[in-house]
Length: 233
Image (cartoon, rainbow, N blue to C red; front, side):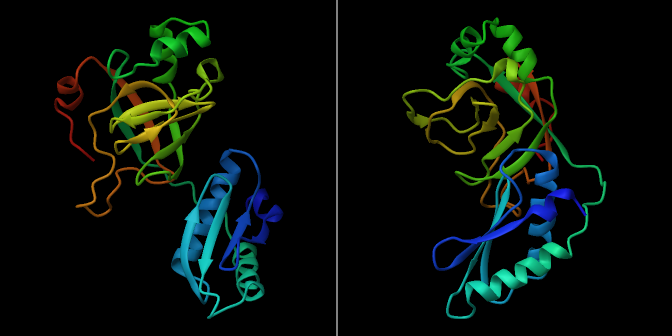
């Protein structure tokens, strides 16, 4: 059992949801606890549960208050937490994301470089070097929140969010990086864009990334180069 399991607290969220909290930080141990509980509850959902929502450090369980009380669902969740096992060491799926950095594709690349006293090439090199872990999906369908960004390029959100961000834009917000699957408003610093469609509602599953996957960014100069010889996951 992961050490995070011992510290799980279960608290109400309104009158029809319960939150299982494993911690307050973004770290691998907490992520494994979240995934283990989500997988367990997906296989054996508590009576009255309607929806499960995993996040960085929590799993929120929405339930029908006409079918169970908070005390009943808390009892079931506590039992599920006590039975959790550490996730097996199966190799995660690694997805390569080609990215055109800078220019019209990454209008904030220069400001990110200036904020961190680096060159644009250094920002690209630092951003594309690690393998990132997908901690969760949210905000919009298929938006991956990626952990593992170097503090050397961590940058605050924009003071004024954009009303329209193109799908595929790669951004930085604080010590997180992510990819906008859809055209939406947003306040992350945009440093590049990928032609890959992260959200495809006509397919099953509709997202190419899942929590627990790994992502590696590959710098390319053009969209055609990005897709050349590449099989879309």
